[in-house]
Length: 119
Image (cartoon, rainbow, N blue to C red; front, side, top):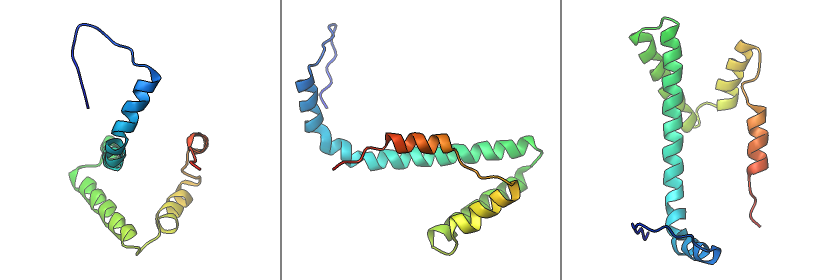
């Protein structure tokens, strides 16, 4: 990418921006999956930390927190290996215990509205 530093600002025209997008589209698309993987991994880590912190606030100490992380790792491996079904073996029992569904229907609707289908 061409980056220039100077004392004057410049406004690019749409044809110039479009040319730059075409020029770097392959690089952007090539790295898109890596960036998405990084964002997902970061989100998962943050959610785990929030869950662990909430349990700490409720009085959990180091050993139960480590057992929890071990169970999460075990369940993840079993889901990835096809040994258990996420919806039937994980989500359904949790929702049954709570007595309500765990979902954000507003977010789901927003995502559906924002998805672009290329034809």
